[in-house]
Image (tube, rainbow, N blue to C red; front, side, top):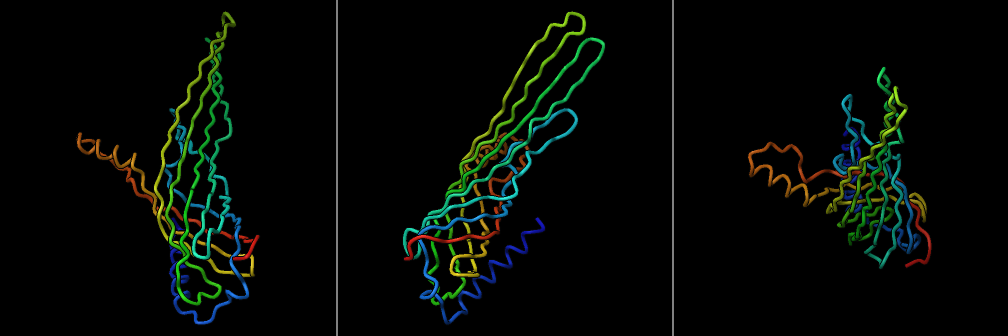
Length: 235
């Protein structure tokens, strides 16, 4: 949460500076077809699985960055895909008593694929600044796996069991983005989006209609900031 004010201030500055600029560098630094980037991402917690046990709740660990690739269809439109991964490395817990030994292994993986269309806002003479309107989808899947082996101390006989829980959804994305060009190819980027889950909205409606308290909102912020590099044919 502590990063939200920084990103929002950056986006406000992008919009203000874009409107205030009167001389551009579009002729010197033309837009190019391809862009690759990397971002620090802060996405909804409910999008990722949690592994619960009788002692604690273990959240899936985030990867530090989200890679992105974009293709500029025309001067004011781009198509972008990102990848969010979270993993919980396999963990082994052993419990032994006079009756036997129990070994339990747990692991979890979550991935999300933000797929966006960026409309580059037609503000005259943006200069080095760029402002975007964004809309898209984000399919996601989270899976938690558990395997157990019990060895009887008296007979030495082993018994095995396994289970897996998964969750899938497709979120709607919408928001604003911005960038500042450091060089003809390198840019600083920031995005502020809102996600909406139809599935969570339906579940929340069902729970409310049946008098069950529901604390999960179908809406959530999704923020990111990073750098990008554009290359390829100039438009």
